[in-house]
Length: 416
Image (cartoon, rainbow, N blue to C red; front, side, top):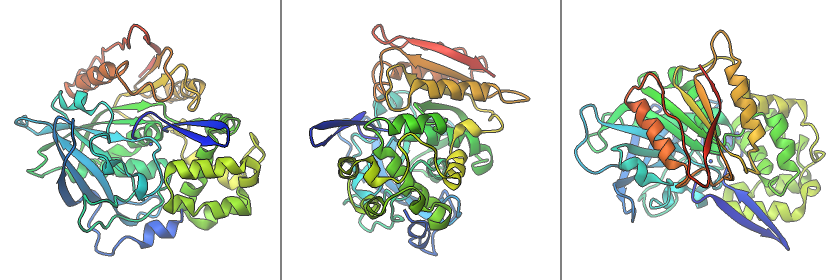
């Protein structure tokens, strides 16, 4: 994610799209070379300049595993090592999962190392190494890589397990390197699209990355409860996110399982080519200017076809059936117009209702903050201290967020 909002103009309408951070399945599967090493292997590292970032930055390529095909793919990302001498066991790692910034190489976060991760210096000051995946399909196409070979996109947008694998495999990729001196202890932070990524990383970490120690997860504005959220999104100027999701689902599941003809018009189907070539802003403005009914065959606010609802349910953290050991914080801004707070409230209640034991979680609500506002100076102190307690193995999990004077925090739910 780069920045907290993108303002898009369609005619005289100002379309404000808050950053949410993957289409043809064949593009993800066949573009990966047969020689791709096992998932979580470092392929390339290139030192880069990151002005204003208080650490040593590298753009990396590493291998991951596509979902649900399990094909090996090459993903790009950023690694920033804090200054000084690493502690015994290596630098603790924070894996940052970005919000919506595009679906192809034109918008890869690591193309902009100085602004790739918001509030990164607050993490580096703690002596934490920061890794940030671009997600598969957002191949880095700039001069940082002399011979870039990432798997081409577009990315499987809002396919939770796909991005979660990418966020976990970059942590694997820095293990054992004398360049990175990374600890096996790590936390995952993610915002919006990346909040969903963080939720799914929590869900699969014990089986997908069993050799690593996930100490905690911060899921900031994670989209969930899609049966409630999607109609709300459709009813606003933010509905182009749904278009990105249609292309992203086809990228992951293929033309048969994710048959776009069931949800898109001929115009909308032709527009999918934008996801491979155009920037996020151009894609969103283009489809928005055409109008919902020109792009979708769906009734605005109406139900999805059954096959699509099945796929949506598979990517909804509200449908997790068992808790995970690491503690979780779900964060919402009380004024979030995109991932509306009622859906994260529902998510917390659903996870607290798991049996025989609930998920270990808290939900924090920040007064007066919107979708992008929960990533900034009003909140970063809470995120850092909570994570520091997790790395310190604070069994009591006894941190209470404060927010700021203007935007105080409230713990609305707590369980586990």
